[in-house]
Image (cartoon, rainbow, N blue to C red; front, top):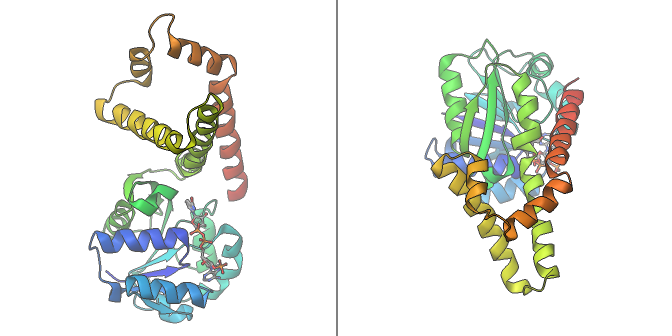
Length: 266
Ligand SMILES: NC(=O)c1ccc[n+]([C@@H]2O[C@H](COP(=O)([O-])OP(=O)(O)OC[C@H]3O[C@@H](n4cnc5c(N)ncnc54)[C@H](OP(=O)(O)O)[C@@H]3O)[C@@H](O)[C@H]2O)c1
């Protein structure tokens, strides 16, 4: 499988690392194009992949062309790529907010997969939600699935509207959790725990709680009840979170992110 990357930034690199770690293809069959020659040199050194500053060389002969530039660079990029694709090729876009129709029209190519990964993809723990245009073949969808699966878990959705919804939950979600982690660390220091231990304490708690929910398959409420003794410390802490409107706040955050995702898509 020959894969081209247009944009070798944080997410492009996460994909390259995952693909090579899983042995989906060889470094020689990966070619990266980026506007930054320093970035290309660094990727070549680290992963032994091929690099080019020529869009034509990147696209020609590749089975899959991954578009991994920032949303604000997409409009200037698409005319550069338009007309370079052959019918058997698949475009896999991870550009947030860019609709499949926009990509297909801008590139003059109809076989498109649109995916929304998230940053834990950098360590193979990503969550990608993806969909495909009706022109993408089963074989192409299989290739997209294996590439996205190389960065963690992947879920196919039949309707593009779920990509905008997932953007607000799993796409932006790591940032919500990082804010919670930050706040918990500050709170722990506030009550007097030493700096050296709080980060580990908080991170292990977040990871452990998520793993417990995942591995037991129990409802979060049931797991919460297990640590909440009547009249105890956890009940007291939870009361403050409920009084402060944590649930409502998260609801409003997700709705606001979703509205923004729809607005970006146009
Ligand atoms: N980070 C996330 O959590 C996340 C999650 C899901 C999806 N995404 C999406 O993934 C995409 C990439 O994000 P990222 O965080 O990897 O961004 P990034 O680190 O900025 O990487 C993008 C790379 O593309 C290069 N580039 C810009 N314009 C180009 C052009 N016309 N041709 C070739 N290369 C070009 C950039 O160079 P310069 O830096 O010199 O401009 C940069 O090296 C975005 O569209 C984002 O929405 C990100």
